[in-house]
Amino acid sequence: MKSDNRELGALAGAGIALGAAAVGAWLSTREKKHHPDSAPGWTQRRNFGDYEVVGRTVTIRKPRTELFAFWREFQNLPQFMENVEKITPKGSGGRAVWTIKAPAGQSVDIETEIAREEQDTLIAWRSVEGSDIDTEGRVTFEDAPGERGTRVSLLIAYKAPGGKVGQAIAKLFMREPEVQARHDLKRFKMLMETGEVSTSARRKDQTRAAQYQQENAR
Amino acid sequence: MKALTWHGKHDVRVDTVDDPEIVNSRDAIIKVTSTAICGSDLHLYDGVIPMVQSGDILGHEFMGEVVETGANSTLKKGQRVVVPFTISCGGCFHCNIKQYSCCENSNPAEKQDASATLYGHPMAGLFGYSHLTGGYSGGQAEYVRVPYSDFGPIVVPDHLDDEKVLFLSDILPTGWMGAENAEINPDDTVAVWGCGPVGLFAIQSAIVMGASKVIAIDHYPHRLELAKKLGADTINFRETDVREALMEMSGGIGVDAVIDAVGMEAHGFAYDNMMDMVKQTVGIGADRASALKQAILAVRPGGRVSIPGVYGGMTDKWPLGAMMEKGLQLRGGQTHVQRYTKDLLDKIEDGTLDTTFLISHRLPLTQAADGYKNFHDNQNEWTKVVLKPGMEA
Ligand SMILES: NC(=O)c1ccc[n+]([C@@H]2O[C@H](COP(=O)([O-])OP(=O)(O)OC[C@H]3O[C@@H](n4cnc5c(N)ncnc54)[C@H](O)[C@@H]3O)[C@@H](O)[C@H]2O)c1
Ligand SMILES: [Zn+2]
Ligand SMILES: [Zn+2]
Image (tube, protein in one colour):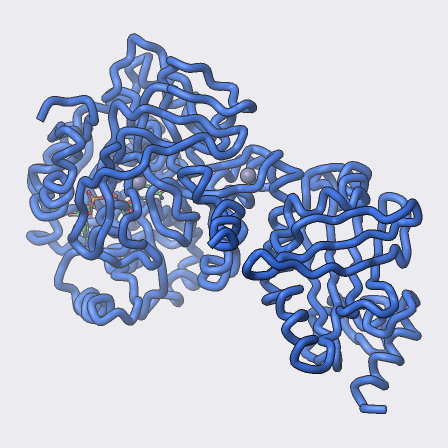
């Protein structure tokens, strides 16, 4: 076992066990042995082995229940997740197929299942066994002080698959994971607080979504 | 439509561009009746603000008629509105505490990274400025797409002419907030650097707020004359040693509060300013802050420093020691316009504030490039330029 893998394993054991190793690495403040300060785990100056781990928090001036309910309807997520074309629920157990945009009108599908759910507090999902991409996500909702609304933290971990093809897929999945997650979460905040996603486009055909479609039509 | 577009340093042109459309549901389209050139536009004109792109439509002081509304706009077609230059959503933490120019949502997500890197936090969206602030098309145009139109624009009564209310969009609240940030008490002597439109409105505001003496500093005789007419004492910095004069004029105590209405392109041949000018020219990104540095040395211990003047980057030789050892308070910022519009509209209506005395030139929009050149080159006479898209050339 490689040393960074061993560390992931240890963290996983100490954290909330979601099954796969990477999730443990996000978990954060409670694990004093590995995280001597109170900052979230994802802000540490360390690497997470084979996993890319991205974490980000925003405060949204809306009640926790409302935000949770919106997110739990996975079909809503493409409204602010720019690289996700659509999310299709599969059955009633929380399984869903995420269709990720790819150049030249192509797309990649990832099937996920709900790994853990706590009403109005937490939703965690992970790719099912045998997926092209090994990924997990977790969003948590926590009351912010006073009238400030809700603190929403989004964590995404994914493992770059081996081989050229795998790596190409991973690139599509999250072109720049850090940037993508940050922007997606900002757009979620905009949508919840203002009812729309801000754009400085002067015309409809100049929005990012319209330009993406034009590129693909070529 | 016709619009004033930026193409590089000292190169702005009136081009024909696509009309704006309703894009989001809270948008409105405004047909511009009056728009102005601001001192902030001169920073873009001089190329000292980063991330302005060729073809960008400038202008952030504008008003006009509502001609189209999105499904969730509360405006009605035909209404006359003045539009704040700061774009604010009305729903975020900062909007909720009335710090509108710090709105977290109006700068599109993908545009926030640049200012977040530069300043530690992203800036809000501003009309017609830089892609740091969203890259929104501006108001020196025939039509403008106004986002969050249910929140920002203020409807103005028909009996008040455009010229009376236009400056509610920016420089009037900016001068007012500049004075408010100086926390003026009745016995105070307040010094204002810069007698451009912002400085003049700061002077007028400081007098309305009850300062016992306001001292205006500039080097253009006509601009100083306007300040004098408002009731200020004046100092021409080309002829007088400013700091020595301020000490004498405040009875040896020093002025209680100082307002920097000059910003990042201070004039003058002080040693530090020359150094900064060289650096700005070669693109090292040093703001020319010599007026502000002078203000910090001039203000009395325990005094207040208010900074409506715009800065965009770093500055050298910052008088940090004076700030700390004298126990100064500093406040600045892009103006929280929406906080002041209603109250200032009342003050225009009841005659407390005069908003037209500083307008020197009115031009059709098609001559906007001339307006820029003259407002930049002939500042003594060209004190404020109003552009009118509907005016005959
Ligand atoms: N905070 C805001 O929201 C906001 C809004 C509008 C404008 N501004 C800024 O306010 C500043 C002034 O705007 P304006 O429209 O009045 O511009 P302006 O260029 O017309 O006026 C600036 C004045 O400062 C004078 N000046 C230059 N160097 C000086 C010095 N060393 N000492 C004293 N005076 C000096 C100039 O002679 C000129 O009259 C600009 O930086 C502008 O970007 C800020
Ligand atoms: Zn301005
Ligand atoms: Zn806001």
